[in-house]
Image 1: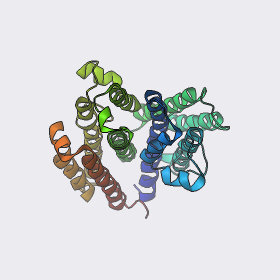
Image 2 (image 1 turned 120 degrees about the vertical axis):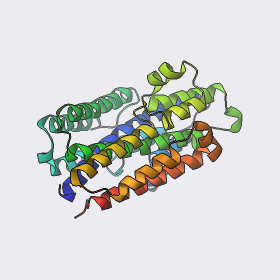
Image 3 (image 1 turned 90 degrees about the vertical axis):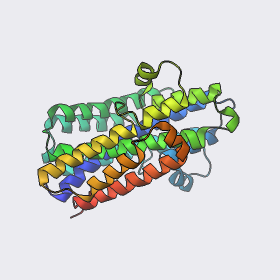
Image 4 (image 1 turned 45 degrees about the vertical axis):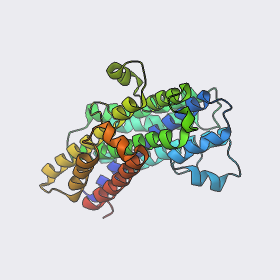
Length: 313
């Protein structure tokens, strides 16, 4: 496969996953604000930081307000990381690799693009926001469904999956980090009702509440939630699950091309060194420090994949 085709597939699915994650992040911000007494607009800074949008927001706005933050994250054309910008970028990459996609995938992506464009044509009111975010998440899910149901299991599919799971792992790590490091108002809140509600909100942000309760019951203990989102190989948004999928699909590419690339060694290092221990080892290391290290390794892995498969040649 040509590097530019692999690049287009990889980034199409990264941007699609990123759009859904940004939509989930906005929902998370709303829910967390409801758990705080005396909630202020300034609390949206942590949400902007999680999505990597705080610096751009500050450059474009004189002060921080909830409405402006949501608008920036959802639909502002000057924000290259907004939900709408991500969906547009996914569609642009899809057009570049149109011949590699099935009709069903192309139609599903076009559908979510047109629906999102219609819903965000004007500033979205707080009343309409849940329905808008829900429609966007449903649309991205349809693209994934069409991908799984109609795409051949070949290198095209592998690059699509690699983009998806690299982006997903990055998002789960960032959401965990913002909860533990930024959102917790003070040490006195640890173990409080506010703390527990916020941890449940994090589960909701990654669609993990149902699965968590099946496995651990109704009590959301922070250590169990961290175990679930970091190390549980059955949870489709956990770091361990995403990393295993990255290893699998990189392995399929190695078999297809008859060459084991350095990116395989990097994902293996991430699995063995950081995702093969119990949660006590993670907490002993320091959850924030652990997450920062994983984020750095994921970024390095992404760069290695681009180099290995000559994305820009």
